[in-house]
Image (tube, rainbow, N blue to C red; front, side, top):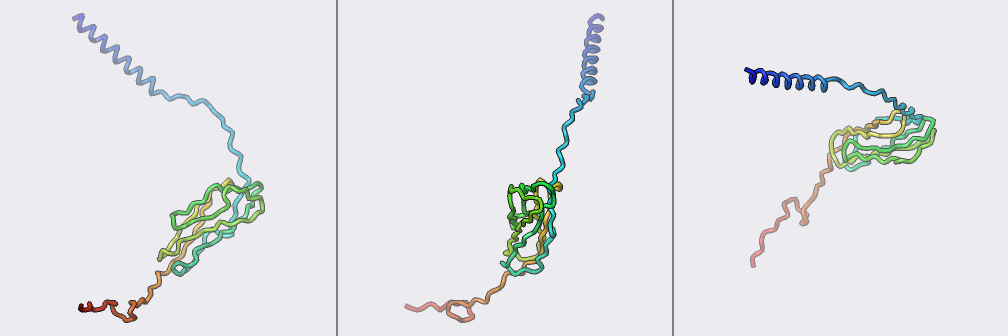
Length: 168
């Protein structure tokens, strides 16, 4: 019976140890109060004449470029760090990492590939140091289908241009 009591003591000791380990690890760790100073709000501000341009209907392979005019209406230089189109068919050109002084007017040129027939709505996302650090510009319109050319064969006839084989 002493073996049985010893076995009970061992199991009891292991159980107590396991339970206390679970309790110790389950306790939340108190976070030390770390105060980081808040970043000062930017005094640069980007104000656009308009943020949506509707091309209407464009000829296939026509002009799909529009310049969005904006002004730094803030009190410190504005810096555009990035501008990305929503797909490869929409390409922005912008003053990259160039300080734009308060009151200065600049443009972001957006070009859409008009060799893609049909309706489109595309966006360009701009990242800057402005009070509103992300702006989205939108272009939309409809590209007409590619023109169908009436091409005649080299012989000038409206047939397939084939000639009968000559006998030798």
